[in-house]
Image 1 (cartoon, rainbow, N blue to C red):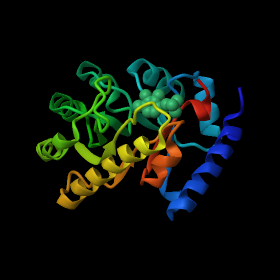
Image 2: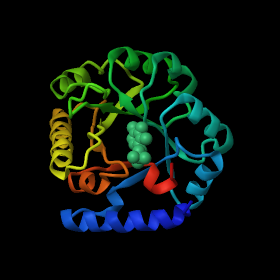
Image 3: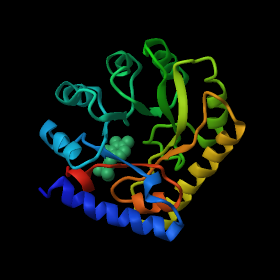
Length: 224
Ligand SMILES: *Cc1c(COP(=O)(O)O)cnc(C)c1O
């Protein structure tokens, strides 16, 4: 397996190029290293390589790595979150990328001791296998979160379809950006919604060109 450092320098180069193409500042893009496939040791190596953000998609994985690394990393919960698992993870993570229903918002609000930064997950592509709100229901959903004082909607998140068609991917990311701008425009104090969590190993350069501020990279960075 290649060093995380080596992978990171390749990825950083591609990020810089994507930023150049789209007139963006690489400083505005945060890499979330998705460590769900790899060991605690590899996650520690990732931190040592200078990556601050680690992402896990299951409570077991998060808890195991949290026991070893504590609050040194900034923790991102990126997977489907069952309401009954909220209690065990909510005060260990800094960001939840998968808020997609009212019952989950209610549980996060109830269990968290302080406000949690949440991304509302949107199923832009409409694939049945994917979680997330339908785009047309997203604004209404966010408006309903006002009563939940422990939820801060920092942005929107999506997973693009797993295909090799740049234009389809681009359209998907662009739609999320438009939706983000719509929510941003509402000026809700609990939902500033300035961030876009989109782009994975196979599509992060396109996501950056379309405005991503958090890219979630697993296999290309830490291996699988
Ligand atoms: C696994 C996962 C990723 C990273 O996937 P790679 O293709 O390995 O980069 C990103 N986001 C979510 C929600 C994931 O579950």
